Image (cartoon, rainbow over all chains, first blue to last red; front, side):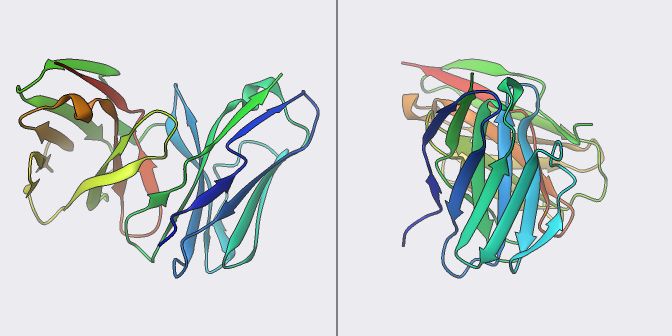
Length: 112
Length: 111
């Protein structure tokens, strides 16, 4: 079984540019999560979806961040415009309802 | 505000000895706790979990202890091996899909 697939693995962009991160969850999982890893906050939940519906986006830092899940097999996290302080590793995770999370390999984002 | 705290950013242990990683939480509604292990350039992977109805769960070299009154859990690795060197994250849930993670503890096992 393929795990959670994220792309790209690395993204380097300039301040002000739009960044789109992509995620394919594990087939059969109905919950999808976007996390950001920073030294200060560890793994910080940005947003999660249940059955493709956003349930809690209170962790999304600003209006510059948006996430979509158009179907059960695909989600995007978009940052527009990007800023240097957005530089971090972004993880996508999926799970069955109320079960443990399975994480992707992450996207290392650098905003110059 | 961090609801799950790992106050030790790093820990070094000699191979063969016991590693003890600690985690504290503030929300008394948390009833499910997990430990994840993360190698560089990889995503976190599930290691072991415990429900609040238990105070201990063991899986091979890994044991998680839960002290509900102190709102504290710990992960014991015995014996520690160099391959255990990684960042360990503690996570908690209040029965639902929202998992709160700590900031991680970087474990180094010295051969």
